[in-house]
Image (cartoon, rainbow, N blue to C red; front, side, top):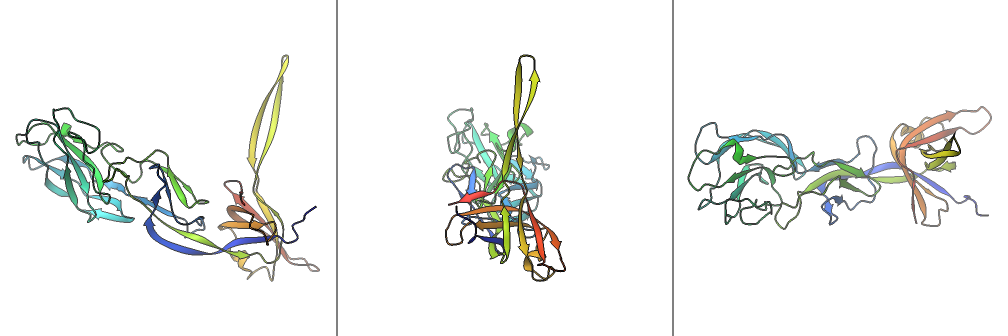
Length: 327
């Protein structure tokens, strides 16, 4: 039977930082990927995700001045092209009315310069609004580098003060929030997945931009290692005897990974310097083959200093998910 005599265990000994950059839509407006295959989770190197959108403020209201065909925009902060940007309040921002008494939507945006900009939609055929982007009487497509913060919907061609009912700013419908929808990070794939598809409201019917900074792991070998056990899911069954039958149920448990590392002095060893860090580990059952096991978890260390034997560390890998296999 084969053994693990030629095995190789590696740990995340360093990181290569990648500056804030745009992620790529996988084609479903929901999953956004990076060129990296792994993202580090070590403290100080974990990914920072910045979808375009409002962070704070930015309420659009009727104009305090009472002037016709204008609105006020409160000061705000937003994620804009991966940068947390502050935008000053802007008063008496002009909106465009329809040429005749039909539906017209003005999209109130923050443009790529961090300024309030109004994008006017096409006049409708009637006073009924369309919810289809770029349709007559509907909201316009806005530039890919802009953020929509509200819509002003008008049906009268005659100049007048904008009313509260004509200003719409529901998150996810008329307003892009950096925090909506929520997302999950897949650091084993270098990607994120939003819990719902993003709205395709930008030029070209694409979604808002999503940026991230991250670090990719650099692997170093645990030179003297043994007894690697990956974190894996085990299953158990329990049963309850009732009248005339038995009811069964199953449960799953994620076990802790572990390995033994033999040490030089138990103090200055590189691996020891990384104890308590959240690290990637890569294990090749045969160092001459490409197949390997990947897992990520917090490194725990229990050192042993015998007087008449080798110093060693019983290491644990406290993972949040089971190890994965790469062929």
